[in-house]
Structures are given as structure tokens and as C-alpha cells.
Length: 73
Image (cartoon, rainbow, N blue to C red; front, side):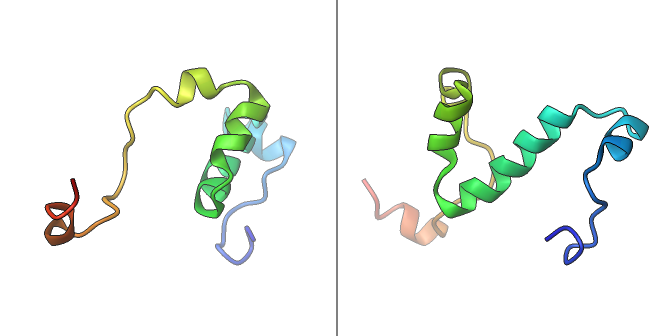
């Protein structure tokens, strides 16, 4: 998947060279992949971080066009 997106492989050397934390990077990747697949909630429970993450405001794109949003209650 990383080669298709032309993204560097996530390795210990890459993480060390760029001053990153491997756990943080793994969680970041899982967040993106699992959110699209609909499994993000269960992953948060698995990591025991649901109480911290689910109370944060949602950032990102709107799911509805403005014309449809006003029709929703």
C-alpha cells in the first residue's frame, strides 16, 4: 500500500531518522485505514483509548452537501 502511494516504508530506521515514535505512527496509520472501513471505534476500545479520543471534537470534511444538511433534523 505504501508503494502505491509513493510513501516511504515505515521502519525503525525511518522512525529514528525522522524523530518519530513507532507506536504513534502505527496508530496514525490505523486511524486512517480503520475509519474508512468503519472499524475505528473497535480499535479505540482495543487500545483502551476510547475514553480519551471519542470526546474530542470531530475535524474534517462534511458528510453532506449544505443543501442536504438543512433537511436533516
